[in-house]
Length: 369
Ligand SMILES: [Zn+2]
Ligand SMILES: [Zn+2]
Image (cartoon, rainbow, N blue to C red; front, side):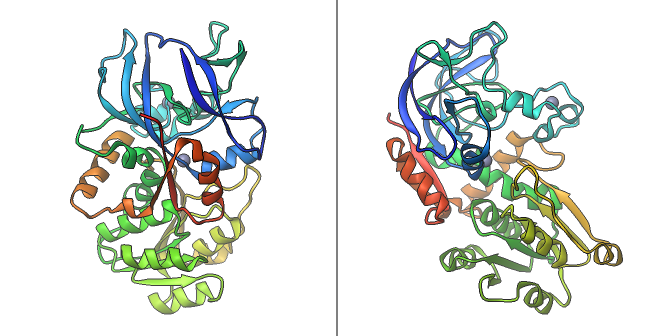
């Protein structure tokens, strides 16, 4: 079938919406008509840095309606409202242990560019392969081909466009707090980076009952939003000594920190901002060759812990966790709609620009009906 997709033709180039071909769903595939897709920093990191075989279709926060299902599919039926998250194998140690976000075949499944086992790729243009099935979906397109392990069925009354970023950014921030750090009521937390991931972590910290919630960023408007969402203190890293201030506010350091910028120097701060028995979750995505320095004596003498967290975090199945977050949203406790700016699909380059310059926290693209 013919679909419209926002094609990337090289690193750092604008996307161009073009017609491409998509194969019919195989026995295990699900065809989703995309209603909306979030734009995540990982899309931009890949677009600007990854040595992909071009052209490529990115996008990994898709929401839509099931249009066709393969003969082996039992999880959803035609007409179901769904969102998608990253793919996992279902067979490895991590998948069996109930943490598919850490699937041992993650890279191979999510970054291989399409299933070409029979010699034909799922996506093509003029009979030439198009790199797709990115992170289980390639949602910058009118249709996406996915599988049961990526798909999450939603209640029909939910606003599909708003739910799109649950698949990655919103989930990832909240998961660091609830699942990887397992923060407790009355504890203190500092969150570095008040973008979509950091602010989702902040809303989770408030739900979990953290009594001191410190947001750190360099953009004043984001710090204002952090206050609105429940930060008890905000620090502008551009003009304040962040570590000294956190130590002062918390009597020597926080119980928890979340690092959501991906900047190694900020990761160092997130570790050094901890008090005794403190735990940090490093969530921001740094470059492949990044290295973080920290003072081992501080880590030893304060008995600190450094944990990594991606997607649904430790010991968590994404779809159950996302349903939990939707429950919080329905109660008004997780107002992530305040992070969102909507764009039409053909404004995708504008949305990328707004994400890069920080003027949009979480862009969501609406696809034509
Ligand atoms: Zn993402
Ligand atoms: Zn696996």
